[in-house]
Length: 274
Image (cartoon, rainbow, N blue to C red):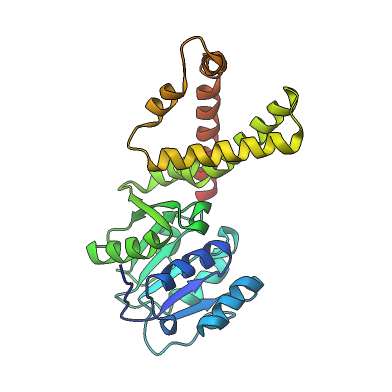
């Protein structure tokens, strides 16, 4: 789907996630002349991308001839209250403000904006960098179908998009998919370490763990079968996999531990949101 906008798109924060999104937008035909990147010190690879496409780069809130169609906030949550207020003044009645910052509520943006501006809080994850992310959004009451469709068009350039109607659920989304890649990477680390304990060379153990985790993820992605069925398909009664799963699926095994971890992440998200 080609991305077409009526006015400028302000990409505020041209880091890894912002750069991944920009790459996806350009790949979908967004006119680079409509983009204004706002970042005092973007990474060299992002700066090169901006130069390559002739995209305007500003260190702070730019001067614009018309209100932006989109202000996408991709800066760290702790600097949001410094960076956003000058940008909020640029928003017009048709502007859609989209945030990908963890722990920043819709209300924290609305307090700087004129009444009636559409605000959408989203949580992407790092696989967006390869176009395989998933982002979930929650919108304020001013974000109607046009604003939501625009947000979905922009975010689907880096992966899947879902919605929750209750903003409070974004903390649970963050705990599952936002933080989730770290859990998967830890699984690969632990699997490799266990392989070493079983006698494998460390380099081979990590190679096996890396290929197994990434390959299994791709199989889950491509298969029409659910995760439980795929697991059962690998497991022969009385075999080696069954022996391992007896440990992992015990009452004190992986499920209660992962549930505890997700609930801890969700709790921290609520604390960050105040």
